[in-house]
Image 1 (cartoon, helix red, strand yellow):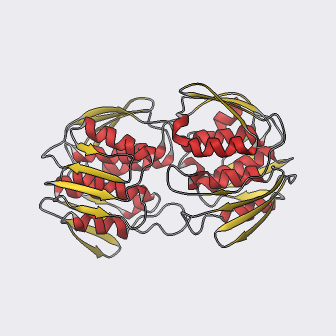
Image 2: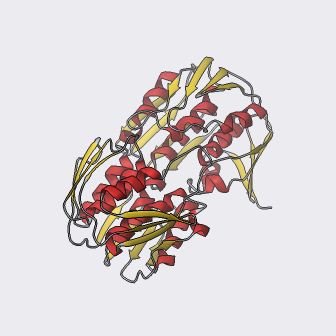
Image 3: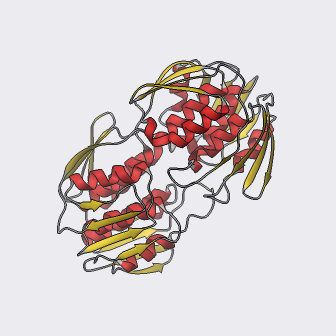
Length: 419
C-alpha cells in the first residue's frame, strides 16, 4: 500500500485547478446504462472510484472509451449482464447506482450489498423501498440484491431521511417508468442537479431538481447526450482549508463557489479571507489569527459532512474552543484519534468533537480510515512541524485526483512512497 511522506511547515502559494466532482461523475456514468446510445461525459476526474465504476460498466457489457483525458464515451448498447459483482461493489458504495438503471431498462438487476468508507450506516433499504414503490420485486439472495420488474411504474416516494444516492437511483429508474413519479424529501445537493441536467439532455422529463420535491414523468426511451461534470465542491473546500491551515495564499480555479457557500461563509467567520474575482475562481489567504467557531453538519445547503474532517483539522490551529457536531453519519470521527497523535487536543463525546486550539502539531505515523479523514490528515501534516507519514492513502485516491501532485505545485513537500 502506498504512503504519503509530508514535511510540514511550508506555506502554500500559487494556483490550483479543481477537478470534476467524483460524486457527480459516478451517477452520470451509471445513467449511461439507461440508453443504447452513446453518452459522452467531460471533466471526469481520474480517481479510483471512477476507475471502479468504469470497470463495472465494462463488466456489464458496456463499452467505455477514453478518447482524451477526463472524457468518457460510454455505449451501453451491448450490455448483456445485469449483475454488479461483489469484487467491485465491496470497494465502492456508489456501485449501487447501477440498480435503478438496470431494472428500468432491462427489467432485472443483481447488485451485491455495497461497501465503501467505514463511516457508519448508510442503509440500502431506502433504495429498495423506493424500487418496490415503483413496482419492482426485490429480494436478497446470498448477499445479493435481486430486483425485477416488467416495467416500472410511477409512484410517490417519500424518503424518511435524505439520501443522495437513493434520490439518484429513483431519478434514473423513474426516467423510464410508466407514469409520473414524485420524490418527497429528495436530496438537494448540486450533484443531484447535475444528474438531472444529464438525464434531461437524454430526453427525461424532470421538474424540481435541487428542491425537496421532484417530479419525473417517465418516457419510453432515452437517447445519447454530451455533458460536462460540475467541479468538485469538496476538493475546492479542501484546498481552501489547505491555504488557511498553512497560512498561505492560493488561487483556486475551475471551481463553482455557489456550490459550497456554507463552507465559505463558515471559513470567513473563522478569519479566512476568501475573495471571488470571477464565477470560477477563489483567492484564499489568512492575514490574522484564526478564531474557533462551532459547526454542525447538515444536508445541503448546510455544512457538508464531507468537509467535517478538514474543518476539524483547521480548528486545531484556531484560537479558542470549537465544537464540531456530526449529524449525518454516526461514525465519522475516526480521524480525531489520528489528529491527536500529531498533538491535537480533541475530545469526542457522542455526536460532537471538542477541539481546543491553537495547538502546535508535530509529525507522526498516521493511518487513514476513510476518504475525507485522509484529507484531514494530509492537511494536518502540512501544518505540522517535522515529518508525517500517512498509511493507506488508497482511501484518498478514491476521491482526490493526484492530490500530492497538486499540493507540490503550490509549495508542499509531499511525496508518494510505494511499498
